[in-house]
Amino acid sequence: MFRSLHMKLVLILVLLILSLMTVVGAFLLNSVVGFYLNDFYAQMAEVFGDAEFVRDLQIEKADEENGVSALQQVLSANKGALGVDGRNRNYYILDGKTGAYLDGSNEEKGRMLDKTPNLLAALNTGKIGDDGDVTADYMDVAIPITRGAVPYIIYIYDTRQTVQDLNSELFLLIIRALVVGLIISVLLSFLLAKTMITPIERLTDGARRVASGDFSHKIEVGSKDEIGVLTATFNNMARQLQETLQAVENERNKLDTLFLHMTDGVVAFNRAGAVIHSNPAAAEMLGRPIAQDSSGDYNTLFGDIAPLSAVLEAGQPGYLEGQRELSGRSLELLLAPFDRESQAGVLVVLHDITQQRRTEELRREFVANVSHELRTPLTNIRSYAETLSDNPGLPPETERNFLGVILNESDRMTHIVQDLLALSRFDSGHSEFHMTCFSFGEAIREVYQAVVLDAQRHGHTLELKLEPGLPEIRADKERIAQVMMNVVSNAIKYTPDGGRIAISAGRAGNRVWLEVSDNGIGIPAEDRSRIFERFYRVDKARSRESGGTGLGLSIAREIVERHAGSIALVDREGPGITVRMELTIEGPGHGR
Ligand code: ADP
Image (tube, rainbow, N blue to C red; front, top):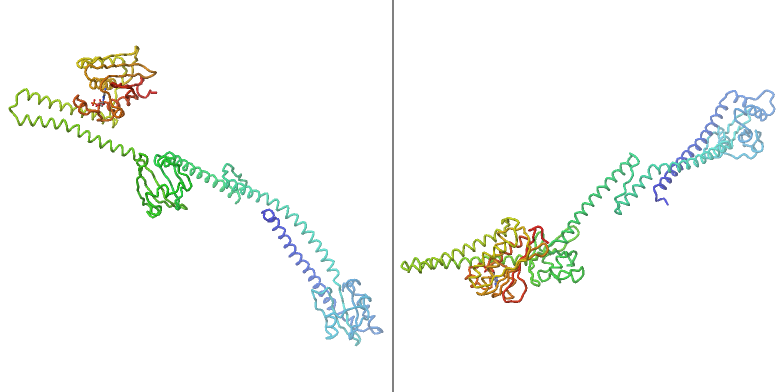
């Protein structure tokens, strides 16, 4: 019940009022008693200090018969000065030796007088007994006097009733003041609650919302005092916290996205070897789902590469490396320990190096091919040149033949070098295309005209079947003509004399197509997929014989693909083959 600040405030105020009133009351009541006691003795000292009064008490009158009644007369005459009222305060005339009651202002009480310490002191020592006792419920003074040689004691006794009545009144007053004080304190506490506790409660509510992640609520700053400053500071803190959280969230989202889409596989394990995180690339590379259960523990997945303890002991920034061949793929593995804040474990990064290996292989093959292709003509040139220089007397015809071979071989080398340069320019992206608009049909016709004589020389039938209304296309005319030329020349080259070669072309949607069919030697099924590779030739000797470099079709494919077109073998039964090329009418950038 006293948990809330409001109740504590009420309690403090009530205790404050209670203790204040108790202390004030105690002091008040005590000092009233003290004051009354002092006042009584001061009054008595004054009256009994009066020499005339004392003389009246002590000196006998000439005709006096009874000393007691004379004393009675004197005392009665001074009732007012003594404050005697006959009820609460009385005077008594007592026997100076026995203390027996002789006369007084109240006979009934006088006969029942107790022997108080003051009275006993006066009786026994003959001195005035006027010791005030604050704790007693009465006040008295006993004055021994001698009148006409007879000893008496004038005894004044006060019941303190007046003081008690006054104290009761005061007590009631204090209680009333206390009740009023309590009511005021409760009212005050409400006022205090409004000015102090309400803002604190608002602050508490705001803090609770922030703790539960609700940053939208802004606490109203109601005052400029310490609570107001605290509220403003809290609002500021909540805003900064929200911004920081937002930044952290953004960063995490970025990392999550990166992690999700990165091509390298990543799997993180804790110290016990259980998976704590993995990305889809890792599962894809390992060819199995990586679950956060026993199937995904370190030993099952990478135990063969290195034991977990060895990786953990590698220490930062150390790491271990490994390789794995998995269903035709080569994976490079990097195993590193991590120790970040509360978590420690092992991180495995999987890198697919299949393509890299393949590229390296192709490069090696390519270099070997180039060297081989260049060495053959060079060897020929060298041996013919040597023969010529070693035998000066050769018949002129043989010499001419030899020189012819040397020229042919050097032409071949020039071809190879030119083709290689063209390919290297495509690879490095330095080759520029000169796009123009020209008639597709016209370009085919020009190629036809260029080869028709050669075809006839070989006894081939060369057919040209163009669909009517072939459009103009946007392309590098010279290069497209080079492709067509290459394909048609191949058909002529690889068809035994007297064959049939058909060039047909047409339009399909926003593309144009060209097909070159022959009924020649064809290409075995196992080589079909490779004839667009660099230096690939089905029959090396035959190709070389006919002046081929094995680069023609790979250059053709580079050119066509850079035009956003396609070139491929048509899947059909022999004899011979059909090569089909497609190009977009609008040129690269406008393809399907
Ligand atoms: P090449 O300069 O040797 O002709 P290409 O790149 O033009 O080189 O062709 C690659 C290989 O594809 C040729 O060596 C040949 O074996 C094969 N080839 C190309 N066209 C034909 C065809 N029409 N018929 C049979 N084989 C062909």
